[in-house]
Length: 154
Image (tube, rainbow, N blue to C red; front, side, top):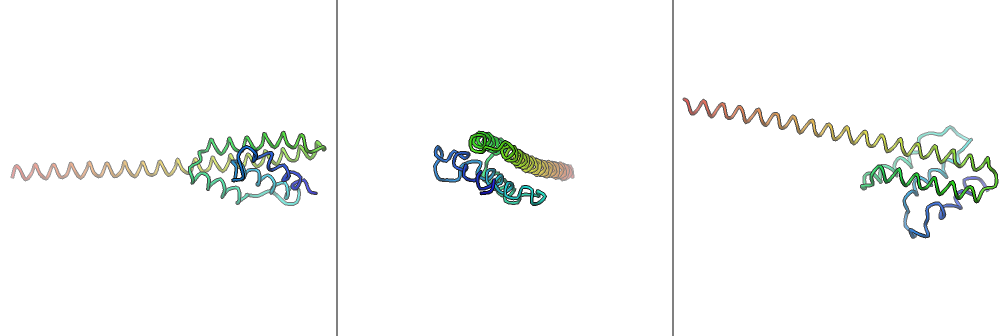
């Protein structure tokens, strides 16, 4: 049984499904990314986990905040650390799991940060468009006032 399979057995414990029920508990996307990374560990150069990226983007789109996403990832890593300490007998395997978990958590933080920067840029662009529209409106009103004053004098 591979290390990824042995960690997958810990899924219910790490995600606290007893407490939360059968639905997708918070942090499922992080745990699954850790298992995928463990399955590929040592075989390929780690790249962008598009599944994780999509899951994080989806959660942000559905209204989860950056703080909630980072807290979920943190909880998964803490529960995973306790579970692998208890379940794995080889300290080297435990170290590999924790290293991969740290890499995935870093990826989550990077995805969240990029999303936050993107949202800030969109907000700034919208604010700039609104300010420009307000300026044009003020100019149009000033021009209308000037025209009305000319008509009144004429």
